[in-house]
Structure formats: C-alpha cells, structure tokens
Image 1 (cartoon, rainbow, N blue to C red):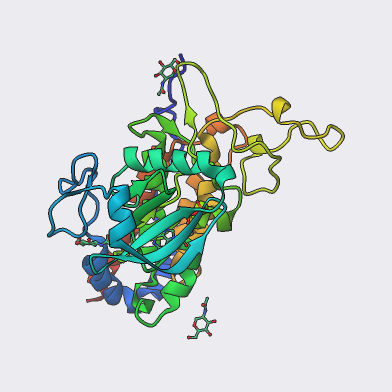
Image 2: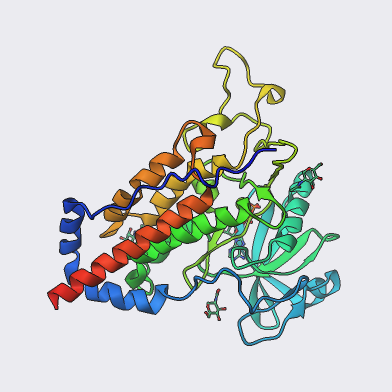
Length: 350
Ligand SMILES: Nc1ncnc2c1ncn2[C@@H]1O[C@H](COP(=O)(O)OP(=O)(O)O)[C@@H](O)[C@H]1O
Ligand SMILES: *[C@@H]1O[C@H](CO)[C@@H](O)[C@H](O)[C@H]1NC(C)=O
Ligand SMILES: *[C@@H]1O[C@H](CO)[C@@H](O)[C@H](O)[C@H]1NC(C)=O
Ligand SMILES: *[C@@H]1O[C@H](CO)[C@@H](O)[C@H](O)[C@H]1NC(C)=O
Ligand SMILES: [Mg+2]
C-alpha cells in the first residue's frame, strides 16, 4: 500500500523579504491604509473548516436565518419552480435562472441523453460532498433529469475580470482579495483530494476556460465548486488510477502525464494510454492561481512569493509535486507574511 507523501514538503524555506519586494511594498504604501480597511472588512472571516450551521444530509438551508428543509422532490420541482432565463450551458447541463418561493434558484437540465451517466455521477457527488466548498443542492428529480441548486448571480470564474471591473466591485479588485480567491480554489482541490469519498480528481479541466467554468463566485467573494460531473476516484489501496475521458489531450495546461507518451508516429489509442492520479490537479494550480491573481497592483509581488511552490507544482514527476494541503499551507503563510509586512510598514509611516 502506498503512503501519501505528506511529509515531503516542497514549500520554500522562510526568509527575509527581498529588496525588490520591499520597493514594491513601499510603492504600495499610499494604498496601505485602504488595503487594511478592506482587509478587515472582507477577508478576516471565512476560515473555519467545519460550518456548524450546515444541515443534516438530505436537507438544505438558504441564508443563515431559515431552518433546514428537505431537498425538493420531483413533485415540488414540477409545481413550485418557475423556469426563467438561461444563464449557462456546458456539455452536460443547460442552466436556467429560476424562481422558487420568490427566491432565485438555478435549475439545471440534462442537455442530451448520451451524457446522462455524467449527469447522474455529478448529482451523486453533489449529494455526497455538500460543504462550504460545493454549491448548495436544493433538490433534484432523476426522472426529469433536473437538479436545483443555489443561484449565484456573479456566475462562474470565467467572468471574474468582468465582475471585478464593475463599479460596484472595483474596490474589491485588490491583491488581497485575489490571493484569497486563489486560497479558496486550492482549498477546494484539497477538499476533493481528501474528500469523505476518498481521493477525487477534478477531471473536467482540460483547459483554463473550461476549468474556470466549473466554479462559481459567491456574493461573498468565495469560490464554490459547481460542476461535479467528472470526479473519478483514485484508490490508493488497490493502486487504481484514473483517466480524464477517452480522448487524446493536448497542450501544456494539462499535466505532462495526461499527454500521449508514444509520439506522433503511434496513433492515439485509449487502451494504451497510461492512467494517472490527483497530481494532475496540482500541475494546474499555478495557471489557475495566476489567472485569479490577475494584473492589479501587488499581483506580481504575490506571484514572486508563490514562485517556489508553483515551481514545485510544475515538477515533471507527479510524485515530486506537493500535495494540495502543502500548497494551501504555503499560500496561507504568504498571505499572513504579506499582511504583516504591509501592517508594520504602515505603522512605521504613521
Ligand atoms: N448555480 C448557478 N448560479 C449561476 N450560474 C450557474 C449556476 N450553475 C451553473 N451556472 C452557469 O452555467 C454554466 C454551466 O454549468 P455547469 O454545471 O458547468 O454545466 P456542464 O456540466 O454542462 O459543464 C456555468 O459555467 C455557469 O456559468
Ligand atoms: C455570505 O455570508 C453571509 C454571512 O457570513 C451569509 O449569510 C450568506 O448566506 C453568504 N452568501 C453567500 C452567497 O454565500
Ligand atoms: C472594464 O471596464 C471598462 C469601462 O468601464 C472597459 O473599457 C474595459 O474593457 C473593461 N475591461 C474588462 C476586462 O471587462
Ligand atoms: C478501494 O478498493 C477496495 C477494494 O475494491 C475497496 O474495498 C475500498 O473501499 C476502495 N477505497 C475507496 C476509497 O473507494
Ligand atoms: Mg461544466
């Protein structure tokens, strides 16, 4: 039986802030007070691991005040939910903004019967993995191929730049919030890799736009996983690995072990394609995080501090990549370090 390389940490050793970063920080000093205010207003909460307000299995709560209700049945979905406009579509689901008891909800419908197995796998995962990291399930009807979830008006991470560009949200377009989003993303990967069902791999992520479309931005500026249709299980005891689909993958967004290894002369054959494990998700973290960090004042300073851990994520050998937990710990340390640095430099200035 294989053991997880939990101890083989790849994070960078603690060290002093290099001069270039000091300079960047000084340049940011004028904004420091604003940063701190936003910091306290928006970032401080939301670090609990287990939400005591969660409902028992088979129930949901919308908002903190209401009670837990059982998931809606087929009958209720048919009679109480009013379908309004289409807000999204992927290969498996067509998603409609809908109304239930005067509340906005999201109704997902199967697009075509050929992908019903994926749809049902996603539903099973959604039921089993309800947590702060996953969109809230409100009900489902297998007979009608429909799923009802919480509606998130800010949509998926694909529209993050556009959302942060809206005048209403422009003040939240800071490196602090964006690093917090990256932390939330890695926390989801960590949650999947150590889920109650075992080590799950986020397969529906063959390029960056597709990957971003699987996650929703909540009104609180946290991230939840929305599309759970392709989450195969790695079984460490049996050594069972996974493959993401049956077709050839290309490009450098996917991990190198996901590429056809036998060269152009040998035609791709799924049966000959080797399987792999959850470390493919680690390979993709630097690209997703870099998108989340964007190009605001301070983004490059954060990138600089994440350089070593991201380099380790891009190890050609999967086993040499850190675990999601390692990455999460490093992100948290960088966030704390940069906050403290900004805080002490502000004090010096005052
Ligand atoms: N609960 C929701 N609130 C708001 N938008 C949603 C919600 N669920 C899905 N969407 C939108 O629909 C798109 C497709 O949803 P997804 O579950 O990824 O479908 P598929 O399984 O077909 O890929 C998402 O990228 C997002 O833009
Ligand atoms: C945001 O957080 C508040 C309280 O922390 C909670 O009541 C609300 O449901 C959250 N909203 C979303 C969309 O997660
Ligand atoms: C941001 O908004 C401005 C106008 O307010 C627009 O010119 C620009 O294209 C927008 N950028 C993005 C990424 O949406
Ligand atoms: C791994 O496979 C074994 C044998 O089939 C099974 O008993 C076990 O439950 C599996 N583990 C997980 C996490 O699914
Ligand atoms: Mg999707």
